Length: 247
Image 1 (cartoon, rainbow, N blue to C red):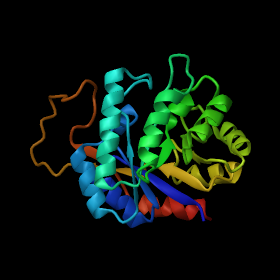
Image 2 (image 1 turned 180 degrees about the vertical axis):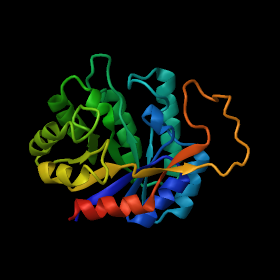
Image 3 (image 1 turned 90 degrees about the horizontal axis):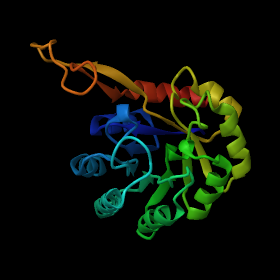
Image 4 (image 1 turned 90 degrees about the vertical axis):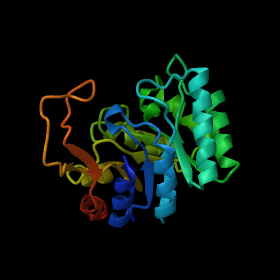
């Protein structure tokens, strides 16, 4: 049975993931920026309402994965909140300036989580590493459960050969979970080539605003987006991806 983790950008998305049959949620916000840590309110409500596993993205900002000391303290504070709230795990990753895994600071975060019974996924900071084979060994040494990866490419299907190589090299020592661009169109081929047992998808669709009055002369953010629609995980898409993955 191929298992699906859903990258949920809100509580509504997390509940849709659960309804659709996902085994786990990676809760985050700001998917257009690659995902950042969700609010404490989102985490608390998700823990209250979800029966499936809840992992929380620990990423204080968009951009690279080279963090300041202050950002590192923020990450630790967020992990402590996840522990207090009863989350099942965290999703994180920190790199050094040369593109290697920051083993010292990652180890501190991993141990914070694991000593309190939380699992740890190393996220797509892995795809930004200068040497993915070395990074794989470093992450295994850290004690992470899994690596979320697109094989160093924009989408997992583009990086399928690298993902397959990583799975062979990992040899069961850690789970390699393909993610990015995993949808109803790509999932069957991705499973066929990689033989992955866990996959990661946002399974999202567009929900239009119910606002009757819509001011179309304003942009609220720094770039153009449709201010009157949001992206939310679709329970039916979750079901379809699971069915096609196991077809």
